[in-house]
Length: 559
Image 1: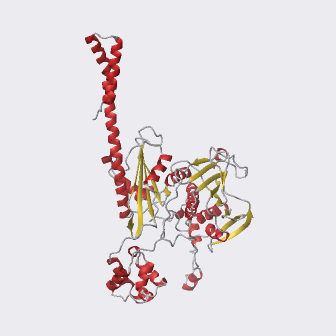
Image 2 (image 1 turned 135 degrees about the horizontal axis):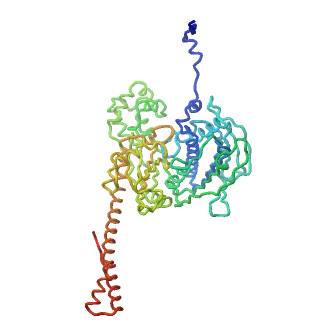
Image 3 (image 1 turned 60 degrees about the horizontal axis):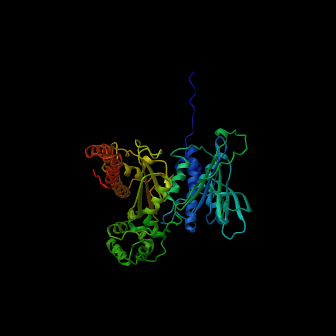
């Protein structure tokens, strides 16, 4: 007997309207957490550490404080970790703590055109949301500002439907940020700082995509940072879920700072007209406080003088004294075309804070064992109206001297954006593409077609910009803008030329040593022949050998 077909009632516009509701940004990212870098337990651990360390470094540098940060990972069960990141920064005022750590898209950096690590106001609050989702635990924040008598200890969670913080505990305590450098008995204590603690489902695995590698690269690209790190794993890494005993404390590992100079502070700039799209231009004209179109152009944009504003208005056929709001609604397209037809000065570059060639080499020498180091910092340039600057460092080791750099393996490429290491999505990054496109055979390396060169070498490439064009919200790869790839290529080629000089010099020295060794081999035979011909004593024979060897040392043997 055939089954009776189930009948459904057709939807109406009214019934469909009843199911419509607003979705908060927290709800969206809760279901799409892979977009933020929380797509696996291993990557979630790395992303949490990354976001917290980035925030700490930004806070310390803006306050003019040499940063000291500790990262403490403690495994409390087979699949659960407690992550604590402490800094000696300026601290966070009580009223801002819940919003910063438990509200997505809340921050002070998104609307500023200024170089900084964090930009979106998502990272650390998303890490707390992931911890809340996987363990049900709240994010705990300890923070003390300078001159404050007591520290605040606040526990928060995110109300994902409303995207707002829920405070579960709010106390005052006697707390100060304390650090334990390895090799020192006495801890280092500060009167101000912040500690964020998140309990989360995670996995700790060593390797090139681990927290260990991220922190090592962070120490290279931030040579002014003093970083302490330890991992406390449960016994055999398989603790029982019901076992609440804490693992034994492991010793701290310290990445010492190489310099005691803070990066140059970066300034804030206004948008450049050549980087503004039509929709944004319309919105800026609607929101401006200027009373005339001419004053809106000069006040709200960078590099627009009174003369340039007059030219733009004339080109668009608009009255310079027109109301900007009216222009936004009626004649914005003609204004947009005129802006892009008028030649303007490039945007100012004091909003950037490059690492510098000297500090890049200091960071590489501190963490990478090699025989040759070099670095190149390119002049600032522009993509889509946004200023950016490219820097490249190179470290080359003699084959066999660095066990981490195999002579028959592809070189290591370390990618950075605004002083932040990028570990994932290397294949989709403009930096990796630029390295692979350079002809490294011309500089003395082996390079398979369409691949990275082979050899015991590390390349670090850094892009500094007011707005890094990441390919996704997880901020792991730089988009393939032609301007960015071109600048990277120029810097890589300059490093390659310097490497070629070093390799050729080393090759000549090796060839001269080979020739010298041949001559050295026959010196005793030559002395013995002279002894027989001239009837010399054994003592005189040894004098001849000594003189010949001294002459050989002074002789320059080129290829």
